[in-house]
Image 1 (cartoon, rainbow, N blue to C red):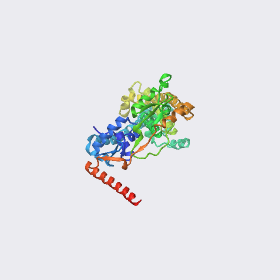
Image 2: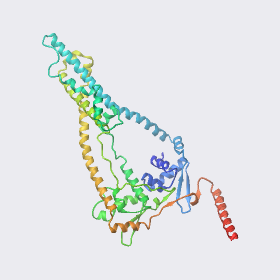
Image 3: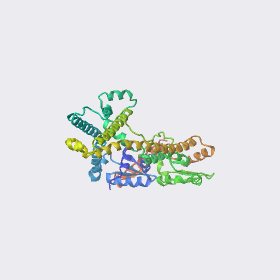
Image 4: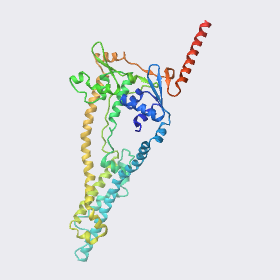
Length: 428
């Protein structure tokens, strides 16, 4: 089985020398999962283990371990190949909706012009008048969106910028730009791990509450049941203060392979609201206008194709359009209905997100202005706070070199230290 990509990325971000706690913190992974993943990665990529005098383990990886794994695993090569291919395919899928919209409008417009021309020609031959009639004079106005100066008019109205081209904007108008919170759980555990490390591996439950949902009320909240998943994930240990308050210690997150510079941690876990579209207002208006034009044009075309005789007489393109008319009408209807449904769905979804964000923010505010009991509880956590950085001087064994060589080297270092001490003693 190929190594875990999340662990591989964490190792790269941490500089190729890591502990289990480093990876669990960086990726927000379960400690057991991080440990197993590092063992597998070290075995497959030619990594090494370094053991400190306290029994802690550091994993050391070559900087080209991805190349080693790529040559070893066909699955990794296929994943990288498919990622590139899917990127191209998905882009083609995105722009296909805009292309089909333009093609649909063109087919509908040309078919209507041909059919009206044929109808008027028949009327002229029967001496029953000529020219356009039947109240259709307004139809060309529906396509003002296609005029050459449309973009110039819209550019004056634009206040925001968009990196999307027209075809990408059409897809964004139809289907949006994906869930902004796809990595919410990953962010949740990363931020919880960051809070624990920021407090040197010892915290109170109230310090974690702003990052959790459904912490419960009443006894569930009082007895801090919501901390159980956190303890399970990061191998935490509850400690009881003399006042009967519970605090939590995470020994494995206190050990690091390198000095960590403390970075600011967000006060609470914030879910991002859904956006209707990443397209700017001009692109949205253009897409909606073309959608309306396409839908109205399909209705007008349907009225002309109702009996089918004109299409049969003209044949060619008109007959082809008559054969796919229901496809054109379905696309035109869906082009307007899908964004409309999505608009109301996003409003409902964002109201729920705002409610959850509000709950987490209220807990963060309580933590920012703690009462005396909470202050005392947080102060008690400092008894268990610790930070251990493992340097080369702390190592007693490494798989990089033979065990006998390490014993000889260690013996030489010990002899050198004794000689220095003897020299100092004789000098005195």
